[in-house]
Length: 245
Image (cartoon, rainbow, N blue to C red):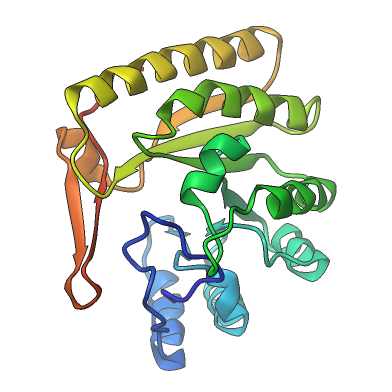
């Protein structure tokens, strides 16, 4: 689904509400199990939990046809104990979209009224960690105005996790206009600080990793990728020049 409970400023699906028909969900799940190769199904959105019955249909049908790997990307704010227990029973990897400390998160990740979501997420994150015992993945979206908060955001996340199961951080740079050279330099400095933090955590024995939004292969070409939703006059650049990490 492209429907979502939030209205993040950078999202190219911000005004959309389409959902895949049930027969398409069934066909996808069935076909995924028909291949001889291992399959990882990644339900995405919008917010997949808005379409919870379709999500369950996808997982249950795919499992019945032999698929065993799933990765869900969610903002987590709709996740109930029922959802989290389901993820555990079905071995679903969870990627939580969260943009860091309030100075960063509340610039980008807002609700339908334009209000920041940091307070709501802080409450929900603790619940997720209490019920979800697998290694968590966190996707941090970074804009030009929030790049300098990347290292403090990662430090805050590591403090929240403490000794619990590890974390893989996927960072994704976005903007509604091209990044300038000065902004790219600031992002590069922020990445250097962030990787120092993660390296220290790794040396201390924690299970941590950093990825450059590996979902979109075109990013690796060093391009700025434009998503344009013409009917709504909304455009967003996902990805910037590849930076060495």
